[in-house]
Image (cartoon, rainbow, N blue to C red; front, side, top):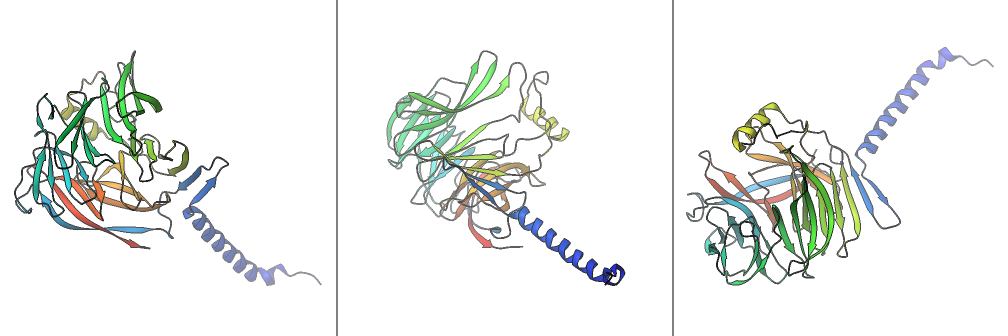
Length: 379
């Protein structure tokens, strides 16, 4: 019996269409599928695509609660130049005011309670505030980069002690863990190069080891959007770190061993001529030394919340530059959302709230507090 190909052509065409559709559907499933690879040294690598996977996709919902530093707030309190926000376990809000050289403390409803520190060089006095953090001993740690010292205060504002910080050209984010170790990023000149390092110190600021070291500049060239090291302490005593020019977040356990690596595909954001011109005008850099890269780094900074979500702040901004775009990852490292959060600096994420530093139309800075919730499976 001879096979009649013409007779069966419609059936074959239908089968091919079905197979093609199934293959396309499978491709989409593979595209969105999170890939996890566990190696013999327990390292889990999570590869995320450019869009959140359908099975974990969510939407961040923000609702304004109140502001601090505006007439509409619970009370009128002047914030001259707020640069950093930290929120305690009890919900108290600590705002580092760089110009006032103080930390201003507010209750969970935004009512002003007290100020910590005052400008000066004596005991309990602060030369300048770069950033702040809490210690496991319920102390507040002030990074005083002007006088190159670390100041410890009680949460009530009583001065405790001062420790000398490294004499480098940059010292950022000192954070103390439950073992008394202090981690920080320091920048130093080595011959004609600027080197940035993530370093572990003792409580007395004796260097123990360098975890990562990168070159961020080489004389005479300077790239204003060059690589930076970012890190934070994890709730389990580990460490989360990344270099901004790579979309790669590394997670270490409490013993410093790598346990997770979070990767994400992304489209590099071009550095526009408008951005270059604006930055050069505002900064006053010598144009003969500035060498911009063609693209911005993969990300700008990151923070985490009480539930272990990771919020990665991108260079991409809103049209009016009042806020930034964030990539959000769940505690497992899966990409779940792309969100827009207002503010000129990286917010704080605590107690189901997001605390931002924003600017009024006249340029006056203030703090805004939002309640944050999540909608699952949003299309």
